[in-house]
Length: 103
Image (cartoon, rainbow, N blue to C red; front, side, top):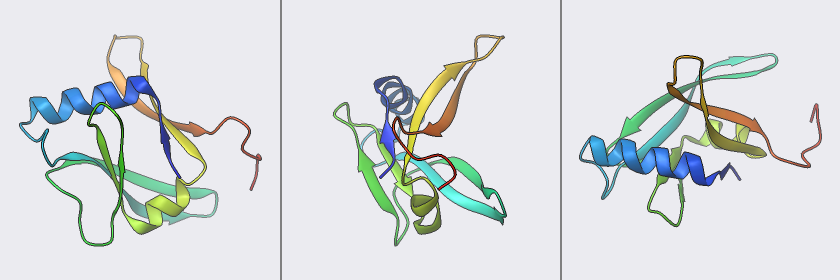
């Protein structure tokens, strides 16, 4: 199951609050294109999960909605937030600590 860092949870909570969706909204991952090495993911703010979505929640109220294919692809990953050279925050998906490489 996708794990979420505290920083990612805080960023999701801030985004949903900013959009007025803090009660039912969350960050949604969906597979946009399947590739040999993995999948191209689409990331969006959603008012609520779609039918079939897996819903993950954090203590701070942050929610992540995973379309079934995305849930499978992200099963052994961690969602984090990283700052780029311009100071912008970007979501990053990384292998979970201890996850077997190439599996």
